[in-house]
Amino acid sequence: MMFSKLQINGLKSIRNYIFDLAPLVLLTGLNSSGKSTALQGVRMLFNAIKGESIYLDGYGTFKDILFSPTSSMDKGQTVPTGIHIKMHIDQETWASIKLTKEQEPLIESSSMQDAWYFHFLSADRQGPVPFFAKHPIQAETAKCFFPGNKGEYLYACLQSRGDEKLPSILLHESHPGYTLRQNVNAWISDIVANANINLEETPDSLDVASITVDGYRQANVGFGVSYTLSVIVSLLGAASLQHNIQTDKNILLTIENPEAHLHGLGQTKMGYLLALTAMSGVQLFVETHSEFIIDGVRLAIKEKLGGMAPEDVLIYFFDRKNGESNIEKISIDETGKLSSWPSGFFDQGRKNKAKLLG
Image (cartoon, rainbow, N blue to C red):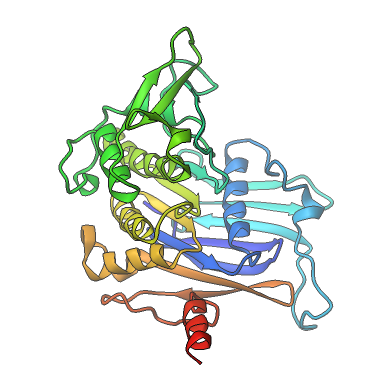
């Protein structure tokens, strides 16, 4: 059970667009073109369903996020006076929020409250810090399903769920074992470096603990491990949750820039991991600026990794024209070929080479 449609109307630079969805949705394009706005819309909707504030911290209120027309906008186009966000699983299962200046938010839902787990992992993730909270804020005994929006609960998540078994599709090819903790170590070693992650209790402290890499504090091994670790734990943790709870609930992860601080080889392998996670039954919305991430996904389709087929992935390329997001849907065929290659879509390298050789 996965989401099939996302409609956003009147939110910041997105005047009106309906996204077709797939197990893996990749959002890419120019800076400030609307990619994060699409993810913001999804987060607002799920906050509303959970009974939390629709307005995300730091983003402002209605007037700050309403679509604002520019003088160069075509006169025949309709200017939204409100914000409407809607997601469908199918015709019977959907959720919607409508925001206007004059009225309280209108939240409508058809059986969505019990139909999903949702997690957002920010691009602004926790770097190499000396200590992590040992427990999520809500309770010491609570199982930490996800590592937090910034990876701040990495220790708690690995500690409480490390012995869970993963679905076979996500077991690393090095055959480290069947548990979440074993495969987190295997994937981080493959994507970043030959690194071994250890959870260490902090003497005389009930509240914090540390994660070391090959015996070193994270501060001594750079940002690549810490930024990537929260992505891997989010992906494998979601797949483990789907596998072990035997739930009919949809699990949706939204992740910003999983490629941050990774070498091109590691980014390509991250693309493979995203593909495998999507094929395990977890739906992913991923914002990326990485051609290597997309190449990894294209290769996964060509190699039929985990049974991945062209219909399992959609790419949306964003640019901005006259103050409005211009969004183009791109598909991938069975050979890994893209259906289109719009201007600005990872073509800067070729442009630079042409100048250097000219």
